[in-house]
Amino acid sequence: MISIDQKNMKINFSSRSGFGNVPGLAKDLLFAHVCPSCNNVMQAFFKTDQEVKLWPYEETHQMSIDRDGIKAPEFRHSVPTPKDPQDKSQYNVYYDQKNGAQKIVLKNHVLKYSTIDLKNIGENADWEPGGKMCELAGLFSLREDLLLRDYVLFSRINERKLWSYDAKNVSDVRFQAKKRVCGFPVEAIGDAPPVILIRYNILNRGWENAVEDFLGHLAIQPTS
Image 1 (spheres, rainbow, N blue to C red):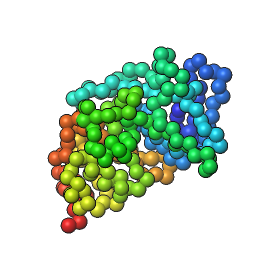
Image 2: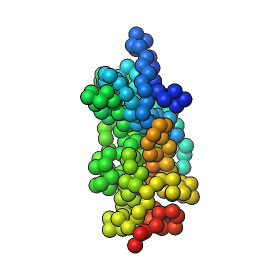
Image 3: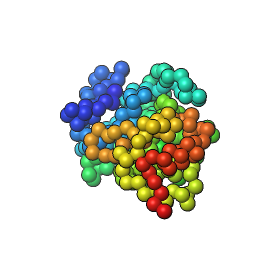
């Protein structure tokens, strides 16, 4: 299991069933985000002298997804399953040997920039292999102003309008007003901007009008 110790700023790796002989690990955490729906670690950035291989530790929860967004998600199974080939993972792993740091990012939970840029977000989108872990997809950037621009771009608002928004901080946006439609931020554990989570059923149906209305009437105002 992969878990976050917020009090001590550690990421803990505990061996899963069948790997009792593999010692647990605790690494110094720089930042992480945990999904409030499936309770998976969406992403984590931590210090380590050697790359942490996730195979003995990973138990990622895969939840049911209601296309209409009405039914509450239910636990389906953990990944990897007993049938999965060795070293299969739901995470993209990036190890920086020179600087002694590693980042893990949960596939289809924190979306790649290419997905945002191409606006390829419908039911026929080219999602990463392994499926979706729950009903939420996330946007993230180390700069909050760029995170908000990605959020506007991802909503399929005309790109000419994109640059008319000059928001700097996610905290300026009152997401709770239309949480189910327009998404909501999940604060980082550590020093990093939040992840903005959006429901898949909204993405599949198109939601540009809702987001444009949301941005226009709340904190983000066009600069011209």
